Image (cartoon, one colour):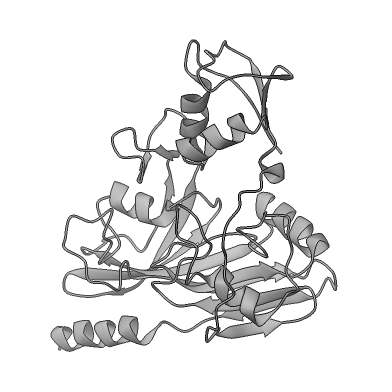
Length: 300
């Protein structure tokens, strides 16, 4: 369940929600049509014009869309597994969960083939998915196998108890050794597929950057997130003028099929059930390291 108060006057309900949630307008309209959106405890149409401080409640957890998510045999790189959770090394190019008409060859398809023991809190399309990383971002992702673990891990993410570190290759040579980018992120008005730094309909976003290596025209950095906004690192790096290398969306340069050079490298958390301290690191993919070797040769 999601709950928010309207901060705009005379805007359509579906438009307002699409600007303030990580849901498409089409999906929001389906929720409204299925009577899962309430304004001041009443079902309203998508065209309802909001008033300031209208209370909106969205029961997205109750929405079930008939889909055909086929379990698919997949070579999952399982870094860790117990009866409560899994840590997987996701390759670049693999979509995490089905959606927008794409119900095949996602990580979820592979998970469903591997095991039936997955949490169902996220709904039919997202079994086990506690958090997401972008299609072309590689590295560590957490999967919940029980609803109890899912609930506790979600709370840990919300309260910033799960620490994640990413490694990214940036375009340009970043002069400072470290930086903190504190800039709110919201959906781009001109392109609904993109996020942007904006003060309007945005959420706070903080990224800590540390330089690992400088090359002739690039910089290798680690990024630690205080928040987990959609495309956060990619948006913040582009905002400061050093976009992630090979990013097909936020860099002006032409990108290869590999996509952005961004890797979920490290994860630290307290196990939600056993309470043990858990630490995982995941090496960069070969394509990434091969490219770094090429950059290294150009330095010599």
